[in-house]
Image 1 (cartoon, rainbow, N blue to C red):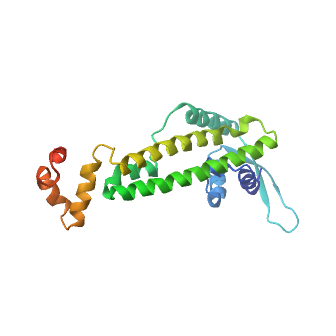
Image 2: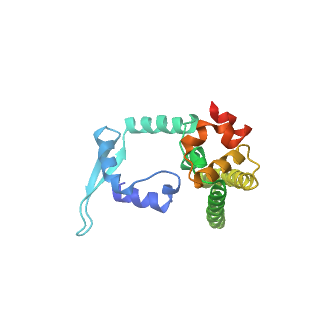
Image 3: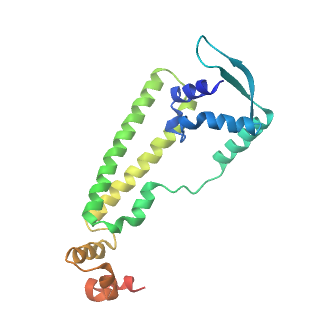
Length: 202
């Protein structure tokens, strides 16, 4: 293929849903692959007044690199840092009820994403495409369902004050709203937060 055809094929197959693609840098990527001997130009064609297009094919070294890379993707878990995990690690910076509300918003967006995937699967089923072409979106659906279950339960626990530590968390924000700094609170946590604040002395 030539790079434009590669871009069109990736878009048609919706690969940006599973792979982080930057179509604007595709030509630079193709040049880099050629420079490293992973692909090579086969021919240059021109249609009418359109610019010349170079068609590339994969080399033996490129095929080997592909196999090694794909094998690693499938076999080796990688620590991935998600925006949700970052938000959860810092959520005490917001007031508990606000966090519960925001998680509720996230849950609704997750439901929308799941409905979209279901619609896509229904369309592909009508087209009688083999399940082989659905596995990545099946995986995404499972991940979204798991996330939806977790954030829904967590939001409920926070709102109901059932998440251990929420009482202290809530009290800290009440004191800060009253003008006290976090440094002042933790300078004598038992006094300001009661026995539950003792853990902050560590």
